Length: 76
Image (tube, rainbow, N blue to C red):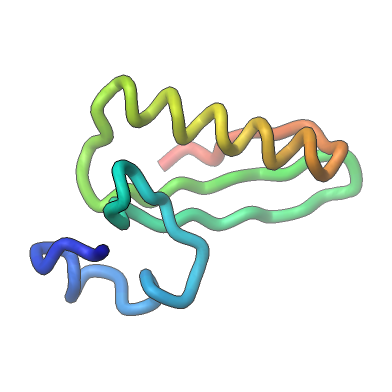
């Protein structure tokens, strides 16, 4: 699930919110809830390919719709 190359990088990758692409943990994320919005900070372990990045961003937008809030992305 977690590539050995990234195992020392994020010790909370198994227990915290993770970014999973094709069954592999490729990063973590954090959401900060506001009254009408959610700020999502993505922390990929490596640069995400375009297809994976689009899928992750769309998943975050669906999360916002589920909460009834606008999603914004923190700049890394």
